[in-house]
Length: 252
Ligand SMILES: Nc1ncnc2c1ncn2[C@@H]1O[C@H](COP(=O)(O)OP(=O)(O)OP(=O)(O)O)[C@@H](O)[C@H]1O
Image 1 (cartoon, rainbow, N blue to C red):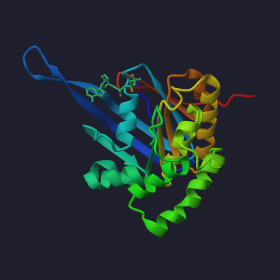
Image 2 (tube, rainbow, N blue to C red; image 1 turned 180 degrees about the vertical axis):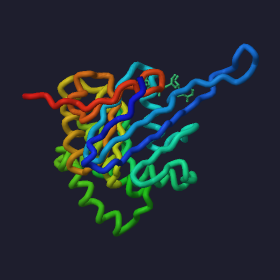
Image 3 (cartoon, rainbow, N blue to C red; image 1 turned 120 degrees about the horizontal axis):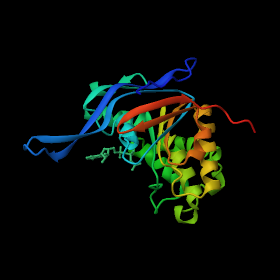
C-alpha cells in the first residue's frame, strides 16, 4: 500500500514531496546494461511546521535518502520537492547550498562538533560560514546564548566540547542547527549514541523546540519507544512509503 502523509491541515506545510524517486547505479545486468537501485520509489511525503515526524523502517529502506533529498544534499531522479516555499529542483548549486544554510537545520547521529572550539563558538561558527563578520557576528552571541539556554547549556557556553557528555554534545548540535532560523529540522538517528534515558530527553527537547520555533522536524529512528514524541509516523520499506499515520498521544 502506498499512502500520502496527512499533516495537521491547520498548520502550514513546510515539506512536500510528490512522487519522488532516487535511483543509484548498481552495477550491470547480465546483458551488460546498467542496473539501478531505487533508494526512493515514487514517495509522497509532507510535514507541517510545528510538527515532528518519526521516520522509521528497516535498514536500507530509504530513510537517510529521504532526509538527503529534503535537505537538498541529493537531487532526486524524478518528482517534485518543496521545502518551505522553494521548489528544490529549480535551484542551481549555489541556491541549493543557500537553502541548506538558511532553511534547513541538520542534526547527525554523532555530533560533528569542532573539538578546538568552545560551546558558544560551535554555534557562532555557522554564522561565520554564512558570511557574517565583525560587529554582525558579535550581535549573534545573544542568539547563541538564547539557544544554549533553551537546550539547558547556557552555563557551559565557554566550556570546551571535550568536557561535555554525549547527551550535552547532542544538545549543542541541536542548538547549532537552529542558529540559522530554519523552517525544517532534519535529524538522522540523533539518539543512537545515547542511553535510553538521554534518548527520551533529546526527543522531548526536539518536540518542544519543534513547537516553540515552529519548524517541521523529521527524525529518523530505529527505536519504536521514541515514536511517542512524534505527531506523525511514516514507515518506509524498499524505498516506498508503506504507512503514514497520526500518532495518538500517550495518556500519562
Ligand atoms: N550512494 C549510494 N550509492 C548506491 N546505493 C546507495 C547509496 N546510498 C544509499 N544507497 C542504497 O539505497 C537504499 C536506501 O539506503 P538508505 O541509506 O537511504 O537507507 P536507510 O533506511 O537510511 O538505512 P539505514 O537504516 O541502514 O541507515 C539502500 O539499498 C542502499 O544500499
